[in-house]
Image (cartoon, rainbow, N blue to C red; front, top):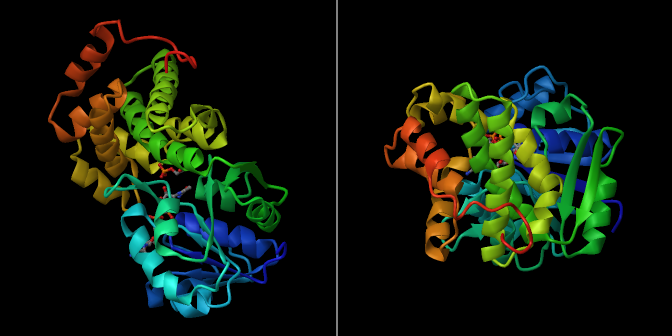
Length: 340
Ligand SMILES: NC(=O)C1=CN([C@@H]2O[C@H](COP(=O)(O)OP(=O)(O)OC[C@H]3O[C@@H](n4cnc5c(N)ncnc54)[C@H](O)[C@@H]3O)[C@@H](O)[C@H]2O)C=CC1
Ligand SMILES: O=C(CO)COP(=O)(O)O
C-alpha cells in the first residue's frame, strides 16, 4: 500500500495537530481524534487548534472529531500522539476497531513504568494485527506548523511501512529518514528529555557555553552507555532521533522539558512547574524510570543521578554541581566503542 486513503491521528495536543496537518496538507483525508467533544467541534469550526497551536490555520483536509470509530474505522495509517501515561489506555480503545494490517505509528517520547516498556512495545502487546513504527526526531510542533524545514526519522523493521510513511508525510519542509532500529530510535527520543531538563536548569543558573557544550556531550555519552547496557545500538543515537533531538531540546525554551529545568532553577517546585507548563513533560517520569533501571543494571549516569537528586531527593543544586565537577575522575573517560 503506497497511497493510504485515510489517515487518523490520535491526540488533540501540539504534536497530534502538527502531524495531522502535514498529512492533510499533503492531500490525504485525515481525521484528528481528541477526547473532548467541544474542543473537537471548536477546532473543526475555527480551522485552528487555538489551545495548543494558536495562530496556525489547519488544512481543509483535516477533520477534528471526538468519535474514535469515525476517525479510525477506515484508516490505513494511524499515528498516536498521546502522552505515555495514557498511551496504553488509548491503544486499548483502538484495538477493537482497527482494520487488520493497519500501520500504527507512535510519536510518543516516553516510557511505561511496568517492565520499562517503550510505546511501540505497548502497541505490540495490545494490537494483534498491526504493522508498527515509530516517528521521532528534532521536531517542535510549533516549527512544523510554521513550515520550518524539518527532518525526522521513521523507524520500523517493515520496509514497506517506511516507504509509505515517507511518501505520506514528506513535503518541501518535512523530510523523513529511514531507520530499521525501532528500539534505538524510540529510546533516544525518551532519554533526551532528561537532559533537556538538565540544560534548562543549567542555563537558568547562568552557565556559559562551555558548560552547555560539556553537558550536551556528556549527556550523549550517558545515553550511549545506558543503551549499551540494554543491548541497544548506541550508534543510533548519532542520528536525528538521538543527538539531533538532544541538541534541539537542550538549547531551546520551546522545549517543555527545558522550561521545566529553568523553572526548577528559579525556585519553583516540581509540581508547580509541571502545572504551569500544562502540557506533556515526559522527562520527569522518564528520569524516575531510567534512574531505577541504571541502579539495577549498575550503569554510571552521573547527570541523570544528579537531576534525580535535585528533583526527588532534596539535594541542593549547588552541592550537586560541586559534586559533579569535583568527584573522582576514574569513571571519566571519553565516548568510544570500547569504553561506553
Ligand atoms: N510537542 C512537540 O513538539 C512534540 C511532542 N512529542 C511527543 O508527543 C507526545 C504528545 O505530546 P504533545 O502532543 O506535545 O502533548 P500535549 O500535552 O500538547 O497534548 C497531549 C494531548 O493528549 C491528550 N490526552 C491525554 N490523555 C488522554 C487520554 N487518556 N485520552 C485521549 N487523549 C488524551 C490531551 O488531552 C492532549 O490533547 C509526547 O510523548 C511528546 O513527547 C514528540 C515530538 C514533538
Ligand atoms: O520532543 C520534542 C521535540 O523534538 C518536544 O520536546 P518537549 O516535549 O520537551 O517540548
